[in-house]
Image (cartoon, rainbow, N blue to C red; front, side):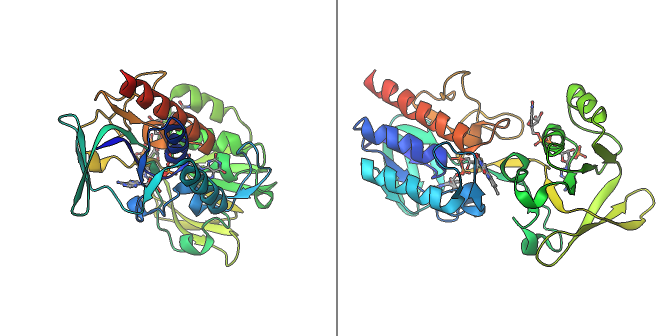
Length: 309
Ligand code: FAD
Ligand code: NDP
């Protein structure tokens, strides 16, 4: 019987592991085996330099995650490289199913992250992280985006937030919206419409990303006229939503309409006593390594308190 099992190995999972191990809870972590299409270590393994994680001026995402993993193990976390297929939370101890093994635990920390949706456009794989990104806050400040025209796809709050953020670096930001309306909140819409650096192209779809080693343009289509044209841009950001990795929970933990785990405000408690959620799997607003790590710490402290009662 385990005290605490941690599912997921991004910044939230490892921070939870470090705190739980130092509290003598002997945590067991399932780091995933390309779970949700991401390597163990999570989303940061898919990026180049991280320049906003305190303590490092710049560190490669994969290297940062190797360091976190080493620290988790150094503190006493046992790490299993496998993916949790399902859980049974109907009674305590909870059951965690991995391959043909069943593990029992008194508490559970879910840190399975979220995956940014991509469009799989021609050119996307070739230019991913070389001008194509799904995170403006993470990548927008990189030198090769400066003073260029940049495109953002999407019409929700994320797209407007990212477009507004990118105007700090770009000469202009073109927002590509597939319908004739924005989905974003009115306040975000107003802010974007009053920003002279943002141009909105409604009824438009991107078709292909152009460029060999860096982005030089985007082939787009007007959905009303079917006319195709080339937009000269130096970068493309997807902001078409994320998918939280919660399908394996099979409805046993309360989630919102999109699938993000609901936690009690100010804590990491889910609606199931003894089950805690940390990181992007419960956060659709901030989605940063440092905020994930912060809630990972909270989850370990919440689990420790739960176990001591
Ligand atoms: P994730 O990092 O998503 O990790 C979750 C892990 O859980 C994954 O490894 C997944 O495989 C695993 N998992 C999922 N399901 C299961 C399962 N059933 N069983 C076992 N394991 C499972 N943030 C910054 O602060 N700075 C940046 O510069 C930055 N750059 C980024 C660049 C890119 C390209 C992307 C995509 C994101 C970037 N971010 C950045 C955001 C940051 O990566 C995330 O906010 C952070 O990784 C979230 O951490 P997490 O622990 O919640 O989950
Ligand atoms: P949303 O699902 O709200 O919006 C996604 C946008 O992308 C929509 O405009 C959608 O178009 C468009 N889209 C989806 N798929 C495609 C596609 N294949 N091609 C072109 N366009 C596409 O996601 P967000 O990430 O923007 O927001 C998620 C949640 O997080 C929301 O509840 C939002 O309010 C919240 N949020 C809040 C913030 C804040 O308060 N500051 C900041 C960021 C997010 P269509 O409208 O046609 O479906």
